[in-house]
Length: 562
Image (cartoon, rainbow, N blue to C red; front, side, top):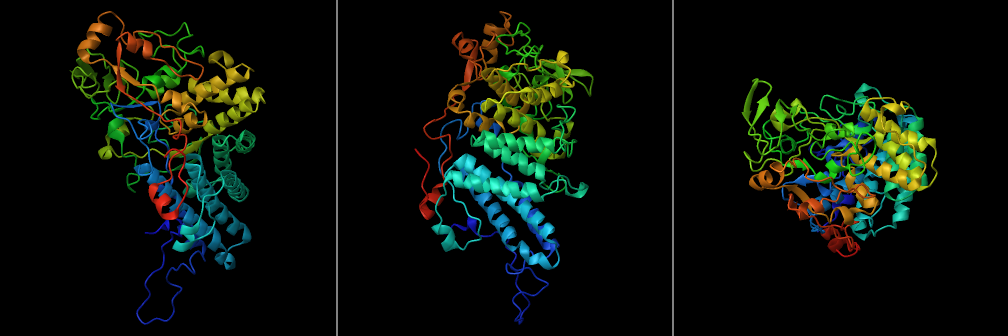
């Protein structure tokens, strides 16, 4: 029994040649001598960018997602200290922290070959990683262990949890150091590395998660004022595998098929006609959240037609969800139960439509499929794809700045401008051209809060952002205690929806002040069915449990009601 996740993870002690009395020959690495040269420090820092250390929340944990009739430990309220990702996130985060601590402590060994400025930069990079890892632990687990040391087993076992405010203060200090010493930009060979702007952006994110709006405002503004990052011109192609190192990406990791670092769940997101499974889909909750082109929600806009639900919607709707009767991955997409054949572009002929449940019973349970980030490259390389793993992008910084100012009730033109920059990009126009898109013009705090939250949902779908939004807004217990709805089975769908002329949505769905759709009226009328029953226990689930092994071995205090 040991808790080795806090012990330095460099692991570079090698066996020396037989008979040698020199335990640390210069030709070999050693825990006592490693990080004495720039090359060694680079190797150590490169190890901090492993994909496994940069975990992201899953949209499957939110109301934006439908995976047939399945729920997750979060959406099924079964999360506990033995849940796989609860243990993996804790372990991997502390492994990265241990490695970062080792670099910070040992980097001074290179003083003979490096200037103090260079050492400070290396240390700043490791502090950035450490702060990011602790940010994730703090925001998800709350009650965590904090250390800046490399520890043996006995020392690690003796550590106790640290007050959240103290941890947050240390996280801020690390981000501040990184922002001070890291460069604003790198050369082409080092684009994946952390920058000062990344430190400011990630500081704003954890501050927002912890409700420290003043710090979030200032950090986001400092990042904006660097004038390094801009919004990518085309929202639709920002997320494609071919789009690398966008000017909008503040911090992210490259993926590579050649290096076997890929997104490996592609087949679930691709419709069945194109060879996928069409199993993981946008929820109707998300579909209903996209505003109309007049800037109004679907239950207020005269532009909304439930029979043609993609018509007159914010452009991000059709950029995120495949519009019916449009070509996608070489096939016309149409889940209608009577559309038994669809057009195949390559063969210029009609073929069997596997995207309707009349043909394939495991086609999308709600008729929707993801389009965001999906293109023909997904069909190559045995379903292994290489889009950049975007950790944080400039649109998030703009909207974090706006949200912080709104919550502080410091409403001015800069708040509206930040939201409008993001919205106008979706329409392909300059944000100053307010006649070309539904610009936000209100000065009312409640109205701006609603606009901001809607904007985040439309902008960040399928990016791992929604989960922490519903957690910090304290609406997870509302949205995750609503059923996940889908279409009736084909025979009932024809009789109750298609034949009366009610396809696709039989009714206009009410949307509340949080941008949350209420589909219960259609269910009560017998037009739709419950596909999955979501549950969320507000008495405990706003924090994750501490892994059971940590509680048992290290006598840590478990979070309430686990």
